[in-house]
Length: 137
Length: 274
Image (cartoon, rainbow over all chains, first blue to last red; front, side, top):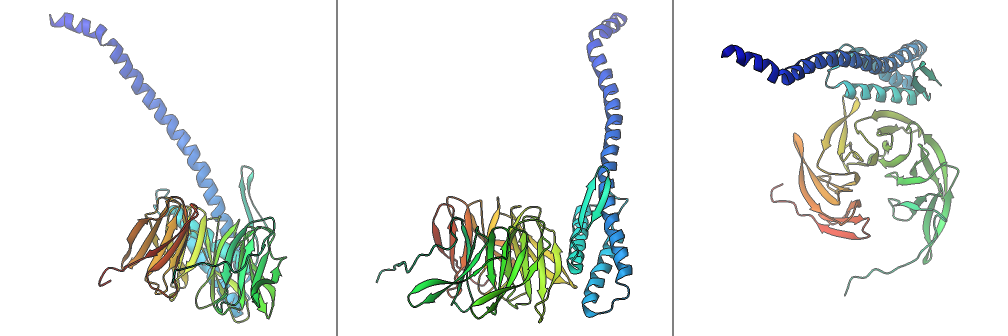
């Protein structure tokens, strides 16, 4: 009696069984495709942010050298803002995309950069494009 | 004797365009108007009539959205859709543009002088609020670029006695800023409005902040250390509330105006002991 139950089970449950197998296979394939897509997205996004901050850092270091010899009172504010900008860039957590204040800190860096440009009276035109980033004055 | 409102005069101020804003100078002798024709006009009385005493042109390339007199009355700041803010210096009847503040990426929506006269704030559609410092030589320097809002910032206003700045935005919030350790930071966010906050006003004592919004309400905020608490909320109008203003002399008297074309007057009463 138990034997014939098994045979019928195999036929009756076939649909459900194949559905389950198909689902599992699909889920695994979807997961790995998703991981690849996510990785690409992350790479692109991360590259944009990294590129932007890298640009600010290069800009800041260059100006640090240029302003090195200046000691007037007006320049002391520029230097303070510059040091603050460099500090923020160095403290930024580049290896933790789950940092909860990531965008807040990024906005603070952007604000500091804009303030610094305003003090220098320089209007940078920062562009990030697929061909690579550029900074024109 | 019944209350009455009598028309004293009417002048064509900004031909073929919109007149956006008006500001009386602190002495009450001049009225500045600005508009879509990119000009600012200064009005004063001559006998019984109001005449245009000067026209400030060549300052902006696009609509002038707001003008603000410095507390001393010698300077006028103008905020424009051309992304700049001009500072004009009064020289008897003439005004000269002494500097143009650049930096915003697009339309500057509002400008405000701090009561001390040393600080100026501007805000823009680029979502940022900029704080500027001016020294005795009329030199302006950017002290901070604040990127706290997530949308267009519509209005900025200073506290009447403290160095505290408030901003209203399309992101439905009001943010407050103060200087902490040599840098300006956002020290509070007032949430509650369900739509764009168009305007803000501190009452003359500085203890209450009124905000008005696209959500048709006027909200009164009270400082409640450590946080902030909404003291009162009222369904003010049937359409967007554009502006709210406290009477400078009578405490608790508040006026609001709306897209529904009405001006409403309110009496705000403080609860006992607060």
